[in-house]
Length: 357
Ligand SMILES: Cc1ncc(COP(=O)(O)O)c(C=O)c1O
Image (cartoon, rainbow, N blue to C red; front, side):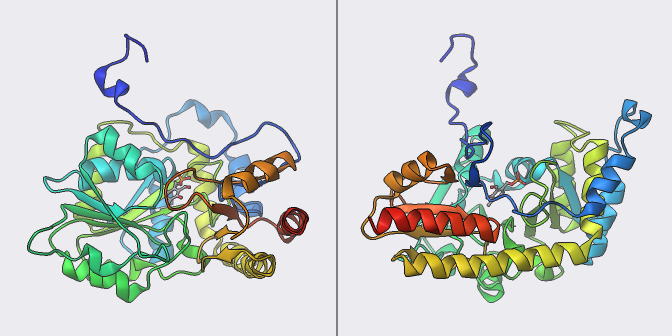
């Protein structure tokens, strides 16, 4: 604490991201990055953009990227908002849509940035418990005589569990809450879950948030986007243009546009991760792990005879990073990003040494 900090900053609880080590040769399965490189078309587009035009500000509206997203998802460009990673998009969503007079509902165990943003924007949150399998129960989000949400935010698939709700379950939440904003964070949806994008025409209160960090292998470029009715998007634009009107630099706009344009590469790369995930689940299960069914590019697993924190620390010593959350109900779990088949093999071989010792 510093006496020079504002009261607001003293009250913050910043999000702590997974470790980004400077040491080389670690097997990095801790922050859900894609194991494959981005499409070669992304690199080509960025290289082409490396010229004197960098002296100019970028297009504040990211027009080409917005159009590419609109084309891919078959929505109007007026229904698309882009930002510097979905964390930034979410910041605007919190400020523009989720700060209401009634509390924001989100799952008790979910993406760690949500509580951080609630503090930052002074939003009252109601954390909704999961069931005993760590699954979201849609009916818990239906309004009752005693309890009503001001807005709802759900990560689907949820993080760090990997569980996904079906489209029908998401729609049941939307139907029951037609009068309030419902935001679905689909950071991991491309790895096998159903996207709510197809419900956008039917529900003007729905906003879907995506990122290029996971399924399009571009965590380093920082690009995310939201899709929703133009009325909701306009709210985000107002927030953005009151904060930073140039969130995406020239190179990010070029690279992201090329990534969205290369659908074939994207779809094949997602399929590779899905197949590797199924093999990883099988190997972990054979080692005695309890693995939650995952529709994401990570798995959430615990071993009945080994402490999660100890296993994560031991793996770190062996040069393998996984994510461990020292928080109630999930302390025994490891969140393991699906890496390349070789990385996953190294992980399971290492775990076998420890477990069978
Ligand atoms: C559920 C969820 N949403 C959003 C993000 C943010 O992604 P980015 O800011 O890289 O787009 C993450 C990152 O881990 C996430 O897990």
